[in-house]
View 1: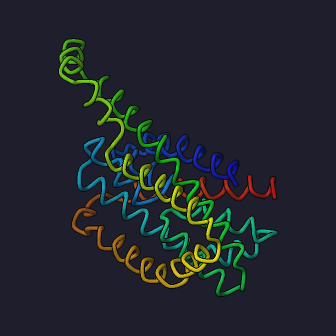
View 2 (view 1 turned 30 degrees about the vertical axis):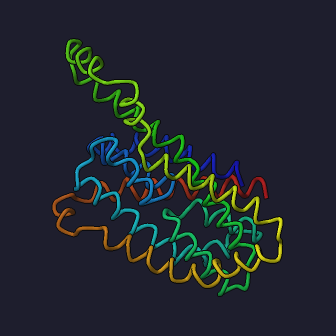
Length: 267
């Protein structure tokens, strides 16, 4: 599924900034929509927002897009992909790239598993989404750097020199690589190391994973979905108009459509 992830994420990173510029959206809002739609929803938005000094309004609009279109996809895509896809693997890959937030992907894949008795699609969707999440390590610093370049264009030469002279190497690193991203990579590495050592006791490992996947995940999913909804402030959305949601919807279609086309070619 790696080609599907690369193609769909790349399509979103290329298309949404152009669409946002065409619609006249603020640069920060456009970048948040790009990260949230292309990579992993609220997680990507949360990681990028402080690095580009996004306003509460920009964050609320981006989160609202994730909630709205991700929830629609979570409900509708299991049935749509069951009709359109030719295998369980393709269904899983499409769910993994077409839906925004990790909790939404897992919720949709669990729904597909229960409805169509297809556990393979759930496993493929989970692996595809986690692979897609790894794009945080590249996309967040890249989008932050892109935003920095755009901001520098607004400054005259003297301001740029003064700004550059006052930023140390460590501060520059922290600016382009948010602490959230460092924690994400660290915890992912820790989990991978834990899996490697635990797998030596296959029976215990399997029981532990079954418990987490079948029991704990149900409560964790509900908590995550509640958190996504509660993080959206209705007052921050007043007067934003329809354009941000048009960009978000078109971006979601590009990301999901690219994933479907590429998965059709390789499965």
